[in-house]
Amino acid sequence: MPVSREEISGILNQYPKEQRFSLAIMQDMQRKYNYIPREGMEALSDYLGCPLSSLYSMATFYKALSLKPKGRHIIKLCDGTACHIRGASPLRDGINRILGIDADETTGDGLFSLELVNCLGSCALAPVMVVDETYYGKMTLEKLPGILEEYRKEASGS
Ligand code: FES
Image 1 (cartoon, rainbow, N blue to C red):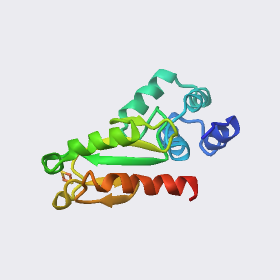
Image 2: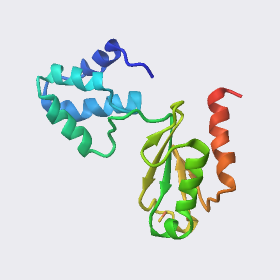
Image 3: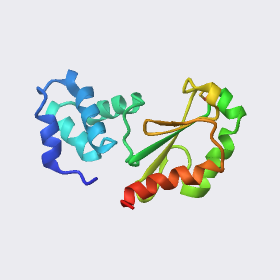
């Protein structure tokens, strides 16, 4: 998604110029763009009059914030103990083969990002993969292409 100055100003102007709102503003940018664009960080630094470096350390500290563009769909592959034992690694390889991405990477078309996560609390369904909010339990390599294809189809409107 292209980043416009107006949109960023729109986010900033909802908050008083006080440093204590920096996290809330970054969260708003994250929600809008799925990451915090460099332009957004610079504008925030100007707006609050605080150093860019301290904003960057805050953004890297919070796992929910990302400074790199993320895909429209976030694939979370569980690599907790139960899922690891039941085949998370072959699934990771399968995603790599099909989409050409590994952990913390995004496909060139911006459709998918892959994240490895710890136990998602559904060990009975291991191995577990979550796409956005949808859980896929007892995942197999065979199911993988079909599931990913659904998201592709939906994106292309077919
Ligand atoms: S280890 Fe994957 S859900 Fe618990």
